Length: 121
Image (tube, rainbow, N blue to C red; front, side, top):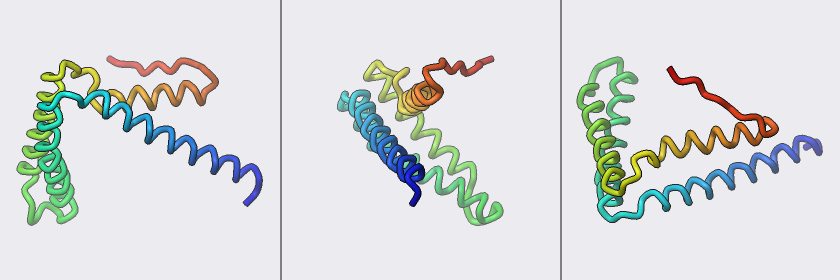
């Protein structure tokens, strides 16, 4: 492996490790209330099943699985997650929002400190 490739590979490994530890810290910090944890634990199987059923619907060409059931299970799980965060009082700190902020911060850091603006309409 060339020295430049080795440096890039090492940087990617460190970056990945830092990202994983940052994500774990974020998850621990936004899932403290027991009701939020319980709703997430109960909703996670519905979330996974919904995604698997929806993907199975498209993979099987529409035969064998019910797309509506997959979407309903997934929606139920998301509602449970939002309810948990509402109970905890941190709806704006839900995982997708925090991951987006982490990604945006990483982009800003890697672009030499330039601010990244995502246009919203």
